[in-house]
Amino acid sequence: MVTAFVMIKANTGEADRLRDSIESIDGVRSAHIVAGDVDLIAKAQVETPAAVKEIAATHIQSIEGIEDTQTYIAMD
View 1 (cartoon, rainbow, N blue to C red):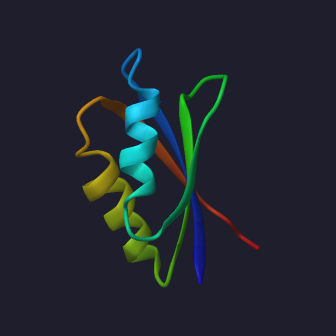
View 2 (cartoon, rainbow, N blue to C red):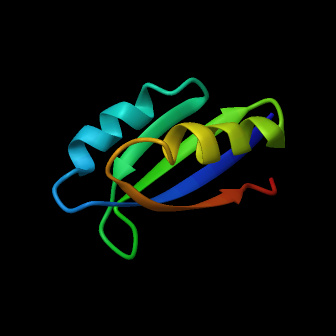
């Protein structure tokens, strides 16, 4: 099992809507609105690193209102 965290920058005022959209993606276990350099953090748990790429690069980045993402894979 691969666990990854996706840091998400969003357009102003879009965080609530985006959280709901992100949480509906298969493999995403949770998404949270946070304070700091990013607006949301999503946790994904999938079978392969390729599935992480699919979630981050294909699904999350295609949602209108997403400005940027950075993905981190857990090492433990």
